[in-house]
Image (cartoon, rainbow, N blue to C red; front, side):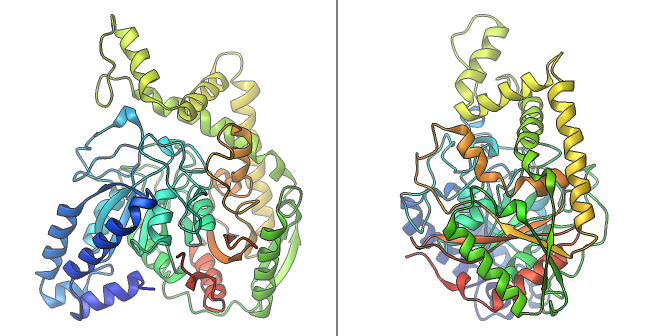
Length: 481
């Protein structure tokens, strides 16, 4: 298993070139992705030019690059001025942004090489990467099953060894859930820790960009590059970026780990429960103490999330009208018909469903009953967590109730699909960081993830706990055939 840390060190020291590394990654994509559908666009020319630029640098300049020559995949809702950004939607088909996202520029400055854009549920709305206008992405552990969503393409890119790291976005679990289902590490940072400038908006009070990697060390390395303030994003916090790599080796002896019974109740499948409970025992062996806590409002999380997220989606997606950019319907009469027809033709069923639900929740006469009430419940959920973190350092739980389900199994039942996010949405509603780390496999050989949540801006602690767990287990070393 080649990590981003290893690649960067080799390129900086001169024992490998960026060009060799990128050619190897391109070869892996060409060989493996035809069966997986992780990528919607491969930036071959751009990647080779960037590799040549790094190889031509002076040795001292190259040594300053923390991600020198490392290939990385970006979820296709992160803007790139050198490649299309489509959000896997017909309405943005072949859209080429005039600018790159803040994180894209930070990566390039750090020496990383964007090798392609990955598939997602359209506009990041989904939990399976089946709701894409491009293709269905398949889980490398079982190609008949989903990889999770909405960042399924980025998760598969890392899980299948096509890139060592990738970026996704997480609105209600869209990094952690696919990380769990594909057996990789996925981190959702604190809201405001990473700039959202250049991230196509879904739920503006929930969205956050974060890393995928095979190891916690690589996730820490990548987070250290993309975290920090940005004046172009008013929600981005100027708090100093911690030394995420430096804190990994600290002992976790004495750390208090909260276990909420609400995360281990009805709906949790035995195979997942067994692996998560085994991981908690491993943490106790490493010196951590588990403490039972109560999060009584957790049961209202799904209803609260799907009102807030859809309301914000309805507002954010109002801009796609067929006028400024993207798909425009042909052969229509007046401008109102053109607006309507362009949106009907351009959006897929799940996006339409969420726009309608959000528009209803925001409509006159229903705003107070639905959206405003959901926002009040959100505040109470946040207070529940704040009280819990007065007693414990982190909270551990499953990431999903079950392992990867079969493609098409839940397509006709949106509610069943929404329930895949039942353990992840709380972190988004509260704006706190959370990480998924591989913790074993069920009886069918499918990966299971352990979720670790912490208070705001406690990424260093989460990464420390996750890293100490990972280096004392071997789950992350197993690769899909």
